[in-house]
Length: 452
Figure 1 (cartoon, rainbow, N blue to C red):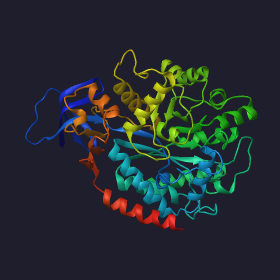
Figure 2 (cartoon, rainbow, N blue to C red):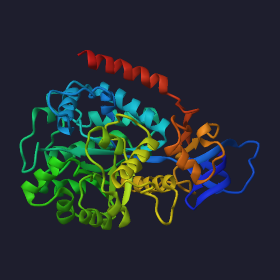
Figure 3 (tube, helix red, strand yellow):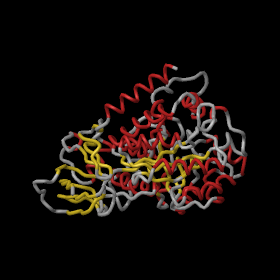
Figure 4 (cartoon, rainbow, N blue to C red):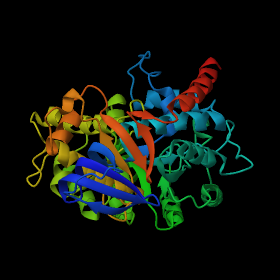
């Protein structure tokens, strides 16, 4: 049995001092507080539960920094998407595996211990299924296994280019499935996981513009009780097109026509009215917020006040992986609200006055719910643990909630020191144990892609 001792750790009931976690079989077998370290204990200063990254397109890590040049017209999400289609059109399965592994290594170094992969590249560059339908899923699983990150794989159903069943564009040919083929792809993907304990499954409908109502109803049962994710109301144009198609806004349509509940995660949900925000909160569904990507793409700012005021749950995701950092996502979430409201500490609550604590605990609770996992430093839970570097000047003299406030808002470099996933340490001194090997594979595949 492995034993970790922390001078201070964030437990489900709050901060505790002199905490010993006994790990066995990848889980926390015992939690003791107010206890001195034994000579055989592995000693650390600050312990936190690992966070869940609710929304990732791992392959897009290879595009980071390559879309920051202005085109001949006003750039927006839709012009960015055309660049993404051209990039993905050249990728081999080996490219996807190597780039996704790099993204996952960086997630672990940033304090994420589980990722929800919104996986929609299924076919070859010409849109033909691979002989093994689950080829691309196997590559994502291999990347997760190589990095050690926990994975909730969310194969994406994608059928149309727009509302009303518009035929798919050439750039989308690698994503497209019939319902029957998607069912077989799900079966193949589950087989590829081989019963690995660290891998869970759900399903994703790409969006209402890509999935017709009858198709949405048909694929939800394929989640088999797991999470159900969907992009919703990310763009103003998407809202306008949905209104023209149905007379309803995207989130409004989902709440009226789908059995949205705690298993669902609505990714972005950026452009909601106050009424939609309160109605979504009432379902118990999670808002999958990706503030860094939403800022990078110029999407807009989440309508947080009515949603959080009605008890809405949220998780954070790195989405396009243009910049991977748990603290970066949480800081951007709060700062966007401050700029919108022209106020400070907007997302702190009456019950939790520390903004850092409110953000971290909210992301922990909503993130684990959205990925169908259990989080927190408690007996019986997976040993997904993060330690912070207490020697950093950013944490000098800090304790309790001031640690979280300073990590999120007061540090110019990552403060993650060590990371354990299912009891196995994969990051030491802020560096993933396989970082060099994975980075070499990433560079090799990306240099080939960009030279093509």
